[in-house]
Length: 175
Length: 101
Image (cartoon, rainbow over all chains, first blue to last red; front, side):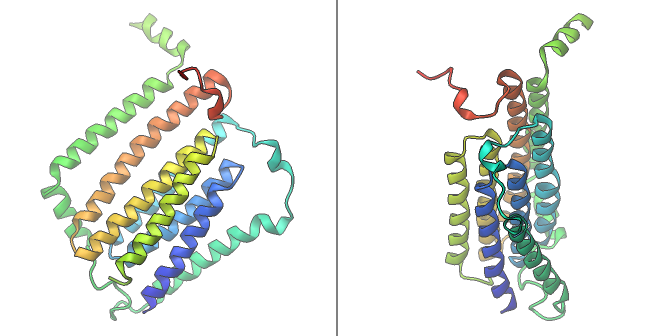
């Protein structure tokens, strides 16, 4: 019962955060709201019986991919368009993010506080990291190899695209 | 399954629609990539929900593969954004129109 209520609350948080993210003028604010949405989705993953994926969602999405976005936004020094400099009242800027953060923190604390011995504390069906790992590396071993190839192709591609003309000339001189 | 499958699919559809709207409406290249992220996230939600519905772990493994694909896509996409910004000093999609037929 608690889990069902939490699912709807988290769904509302995810939708609200995503909706706020896509209307932001400044990409930095959009990334911040998107992190809230990703946290809400991670908690939903846990409620649906995927604890390992919930952790990976936070580590990979919020920790790596969103930080990559922030790096690029800061590197490019994109100035927001003029319309955003028109200052809204102060509370309109921090109230939504404060509200979403508080909701997420309270829901996380409720989830931590649930007694693991009861069926409310742990989802009735859930994939333990052990099950997950066995299936991943036995049945899907080929997929793991293909994905690792693809990641290295992506790294090579990113290097190639990111190479400037000057650096390319220097490489050709050296060879 | 803690909620009916229809409700989960509705949530995922709404998230997907928000991401699609972001891709179609925004003119900023970084916001377009963020929209793609939102759509990929909603697909991951559907996969985890299906995994819980059939009580099989396969759906969760597909989400892991999806995360790896997303990481690759973001790495290439952001490298392209940096490259285009070096070329044109702007990341508004409206100015990249040399290929219009």
